[in-house]
Image (cartoon, rainbow over the protein chains, first blue to last red):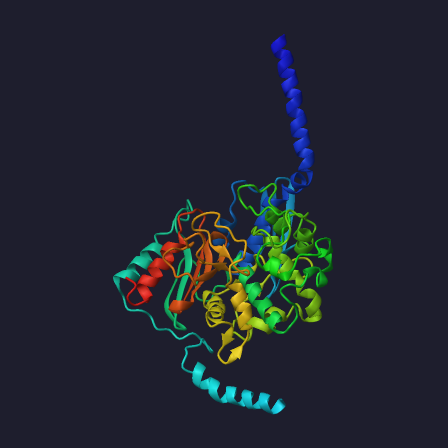
Length: 104
Length: 365
């Protein structure tokens, strides 16, 4: 019984600490899931359409630990969309000098 | 006064061809004088280009290695899909490229080193004491977290490039709070570099978009340069310049020759001196870690040690993520460009510089 009480207090503390940490980091946590798809879309676009490497090379170049849900590169429009961790991001080639950019 | 000036100008035109015509310049193209085969050259090849492991991405993974000696190519090799025509991503080497663009603007009198940047870039007015000099030393004092892979959640640089900051990277940086007083501590920050990217928008106005080409790339004969911008059209000075190894070496040669391109002083000599002067409050954090100058990295001696012990103390470099480097060794008239895709810490810059010197500097073996 006493052990249970101690555990309940510890659990409550843990929830409190986690809650406080999440609140403190809420901006970071909200943005975090975008990193995977945004990084992949932007760096693949530049790898392929700015530096001019092959699709196969660029797939390897942007590969991360976490898997993507979907990925589509349109070579004629020079536009790349990646989806992962529930977020989707698109990068597109603008012109010769200024290369690729993430969509807002 | 005018007579004196034009007499001096005339003398300069008459004299200068004699001076610079004796030097090798990549105008219009680099001349190539390959070094003869030698054991030292073999050792350099073996170090820089081991069999490449694309499955595990482990080990030294050079994409390109180019060595210039006395203004001529003495060594050039590419790996994988890279060629002499590949505009390679420079990552943080871009910071020093942008600083070179700034150097031309400095020569035009567009800003002073001790001028508050907020005078040119209003979003920085919460930090009214931050000067160009502070940003150039990566010493804005802003509370910034420069960490890529190991702490991605709170990394300011990842958020700037890919999430909360990507539409306006300079404003994202300017919104950070103050950590320490400006100019008191070097804390490497891509945000500081992107504030420098935005700072010139004020004084340049409509010339801004064209300026890197008009001021630097075209005069140097650089045709491969690309420079990506954020949602505000601000060049991502921290990370997103691209060019070939041969073109990047042109910036190296400009720096090696104190800002002079043939008979034209493109960068003021005092600007290059500033780039190459150690930040007053620099600390030797870790052995092998280069020391901060003005948006360039120095092999300066601090506490009796140099970051690259086997290279001369006047060596300086532009350094980027995953092994991108442009190193200038002025006392040996050497320029070394290396592009890479190093995904671990196998590569040691000191080792490369030692092997390059052994191969191309007589009496170094």
